[in-house]
Every structure is written in structure tokens, then in C-alpha cells.
Image 1 (cartoon, rainbow, N blue to C red):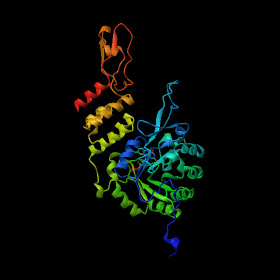
Image 2: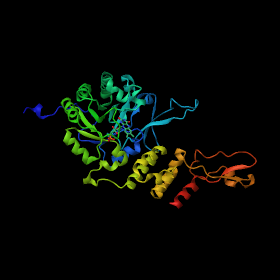
Image 3: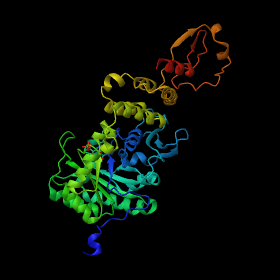
Length: 415
Ligand SMILES: Cc1cc2nc3c(=O)[nH]c(=O)nc-3n(C[C@H](O)[C@H](O)[C@H](O)COP(=O)(O)O)c2cc1C
């Protein structure tokens, strides 16, 4: 055997990039793949995490900031579809942890245009370990713009996008570019597509083992997987399998059986992020441990409460009764019995996010307004909830009597 026969071909991995070989990774998931879920997946041993698909034009023109309070990097902008014409409130469209996700986060782009893809990738490329193009989303919002699974029908366009990213992003930022596809109807069609894509200079290809019309509840099909793995291997591109992979141990067995390099997990990890922990390291965690850790991360990064609750609904057994009445982090922390430190943080985050309950309004005659209040002295208390009413200047004064500190005291005493 010659040296070249012994050494399998490998597309070089740029110095700031990552090799997908041997990795069990968290799939990109809109809503379910926000920062707290990714941190939880890493906590339980995911080797890499994909962020949720972000469409190129939402990123272009966004502002990148380091959030001094949380230490997180955030990209924000005024939503273009903002109903209120003069509302310039920015919303965070992407958030990452520059420390815990360093070298582990793959940014997934939704795009149908090479120039837009490059412009969008440029805004995040210095802060992530790879750029992935979504060529598998079957939802009309994606395909109607020529993105996602629509790109499977326009392979030259998809290849053009990948080539542009490889040409413009790889040398400048020293990270890899990859693509996530679905299977086509026949092995011949899939093979032709994969051959074209692996010739673009990408370092990785993920194949979701379902065709575009298949619904998520239909079992993934494995018939074409070995072939896709072989075509990738010939080209030196890492092949990651996806579809009904249920955990680390199952992933390793499937990688071995089908000769692919890595495995990606979506819905099993959405329900139970500890699937990334193999049996030898303790296996599955108790739901309450996972839910509490998720809430800790969510509060740490000031995640939108609605998103945290959405994520918890997947993780918490019997979650409907326990979590669905909760409207604040305080209520969630109490429901999960997470203790006083967590409750203190919950009060802070509820205030920061403006979801602390408006205090009861008490009608007080003007003469009865407490002296301290008249002086406007807040005595070093936490800042007011953004929902707090303003002090009116009428004959009868509606006075907010319950400030933030008492809210916290009340919260803690109940726990
Ligand atoms: C809630 C949710 C959101 C998803 N969002 C994305 C996405 O942003 N990008 C993408 O390529 N696939 C997305 N997918 C598809 C998954 O990444 C994955 O390909 C699919 O669920 C199959 O894997 P599984 O059988 O492990 O669930 C999403 C799936 C779910 C359940």
C-alpha cells in the first residue's frame, strides 16, 4: 500500500475552524436552538452546536455588541416589519457566548444569493467556528424565497453560494464552510448533488435522511446514507448524518454502521439534552436537573422569557401543569424549587426584561404619600420595572407602593 492509499483524503480544516469528524452535535433548530439550549447541550457533552437558521438579510445591517452585563455577544437591529412606524426599539436577532461556545458554534445561514450570503457571514464569521448553509428547510417561508430545500432543486445556485463563501470567508476568517441538505428522491439524484457540493471547497456536509416532502414524524431512511458517506470521503469532506439519531451511544453505532464521520441530533436533544452524555458518563439526567440548569443559563444570558418557556415545555415532564401558568422567571424558579440565589437572579432578570408583575395600585390621598417618596428617594433600591406606572400629578395620587425590593422579599419568603 502506498502512503496516499493509507491516508484518506481530507480537505484542510482552516486554523480557526473545526473538523466535524468523530463529533456528535446539536442540530440547528429555530426557537429550540437559542443560546440557553446550546449551553445545555454543551453542558451534557455535545461536541459542537449549530445555531438556529438566521436569514441573511436580517443579519446584514445589524449591530454587534458585547453585552456588558452578561458578557454575551449580541446582534440586534430594528425589525424591518416593525408595525409601529417610529418605534426604533432594537431586538436581538442572534446571541452567543464568546467563552463557552468558543470553537464549538456553527452559524447557520438561510440564503439564496451568494453576495448576501457573504455579506451576512462577514458580520459573524470572526465570532464562530464555521458557517453552514441551510439547504434542507421545507417550510414555505424558506422555500418561497429560494432558500432552504428549494436550493436542492437549483444545485448550481447552491454550489455558487458555497463557492462564494469559501472564496471570501475562508481566507479572511480562517473558518470552514459547510452545508446541510436532505435526500433527493433517487440515489442517483442525491449522488449527483453531493458530488457537485463536495467540489466547492466545503469542509463538511450534513445529510438529513429524509426527503423534502417527508414529515418529521416519518422514520428517517438510511438507504442512501452509505453512498453519501462514500462520496464525501472520496472528496475528503466530513459527512455528518442526521435524522432519528437518539443519543451519543446510538450515534456512535450508526456512524460505524454507515461509515459516516459524525452525527447530528435535533428532536431527541430538544426533549432531553442529556442524550449527548453517553452511558459511560452517567447517561440521561433527571428532567428537573435539566430544566433547572436551562433556567440558570437562560437567566444568565437574559434570554427572552417566552423562548425559555417554549424550551422548557419540551423538557419538563408534566410541564403543562408546572410551567404553563408561569409568566415570569420568578414563577418558573419557584415552580422548579431552585432556591434563593436563583430567585434573587430571577427578580433581577424579570426587571431587566420588563416582565416583573406590575405592583398592585393603591389609591393614596395626597397628604398620605410617604415622606421618602415625596423626596423621590429610592434608597438604593433596584431600578423600577419598565411596566411600573408613572406617578400622576392629580388631586388623588395613584401611588406605586410596592417597589422592587419588596417584590424580591416576597418572592423569597414564599419559596
Ligand atoms: C424546532 C425545530 C427547528 C428546526 N430548525 C432548523 C433550522 O433552523 N435549520 C435546519 O437546517 N434544520 C432545522 N430543523 C431540522 C433539524 O435540524 C433536523 O434536521 C431534523 O429535525 C431531523 O433531525 P431529528 O430526526 O434528530 O429530529 C429544525 C427542526 C426542529 C424540530
